Length: 148
Length: 148
DNA sequence: ACGGAGTCGTTGCAAGGTCAACAATTGACC
DNA sequence: GGTCAATTGTTGACCTTGCAACGACTCCGT
Image (cartoon, rainbow over all chains, first blue to last red):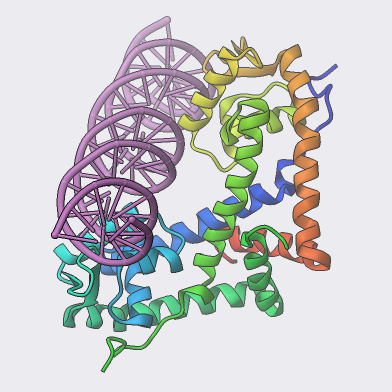
């Protein structure tokens, strides 16, 4: 007899596994482009992307909007500041808050970053074909906070 | 003027981001169950699941089949051995290889592990509704090795 | 005005992951 | 048969992440 004496479980069919593999692969692919072309990490990219939408924001707001620990945001912001892409200054109305703002070079960087992201997004949707939107919706349902 | 002087980019619509969030959420949810109920990690679960399909295998084979670094597999196997769930013995035909085999208690563990995984899978597919299979297929397309 | 609870961002630390050496072993080629 | 490249699994070094504690600060009730 062989060793498969218990119920076999096909890991390849297991959704958490597939999800993890897909996320790792895509994340790696994307991170590699950004690292090579621009020298920034995913965490830094997320902070910049959020800033492109909102203008100056606090760490707390990014934390609420983006799925990242505040320490991760803090460190990413420190690196972005060291690279001259953003500035950090305390909010005079509430000195606990830090306002993160894009510098001119940060805005320049974003204008180069965003087309690359859009292009990659287009590649992925092409890879998915017509179901792309359905898949995108499904992902938010999977990440959804407790079904109500 | 506000700070959004550059093209805004909506991170929420970005597939790599959604994918990462979904994978993290699902992975966490699942890992939590396994940790609480059985005291094993995802890496260990993957090794066990693979063993349930194949019977005794080498680290190399798991590495080829499962998306995990060989060092990660090696350490997971060491923990599983310490816990008495598997045994490691060198392959007499090729003494570089290590054969990982389930022990009786490992098989028992698997018979309890697998239903929980199946149940969670059912929950997820329910969350996804009728598109579930399409989403599952899409995930492998996203993880697909270089489009040909 | 004061004290205490609550919030914000940073930092320290432990845990986990990745990557590259490394010893042990095998197979191929001369 | 001997040597050298290639493979396998483990280990160590390094980096990142997640969590909790911390100092600084605000706000509320008294």
